[in-house]
Length: 157
Image (cartoon, rainbow, N blue to C red; front, top):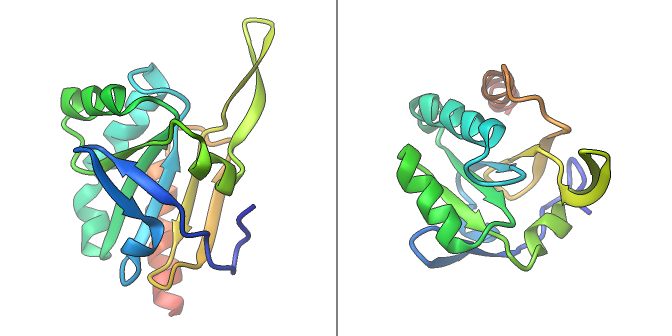
């Protein structure tokens, strides 16, 4: 499991557009990696729209945004296209990325226990080191908090 102050594992990613990448491909830039439970659901849509609205602020900080869930590539493609997200989504159908970041939890859905993604965000620096994490995220105000933390960490050097 990932730990603040330690390098993140170099997991393979399947990105929208059908492109393959690795987490190490983002070295040299900061990375916001956010996990959402399911494409095209209300909270996940709002979170994506909040990141979309702030994309220029993140780009000014030389920071890339990636959203990830266990949804299929087709579902991620539809989700990205429908809301015109200006960043890639990861189709983590084999849960390798989810496992590396420890975001799979047992959750209550209508009184039933189900296995799913706990909404989480990870801030990874330009050297591939985890600098901050948020688990059990509430969508409202979250993107602003991530941006403020990013600016503060970059200022510290």
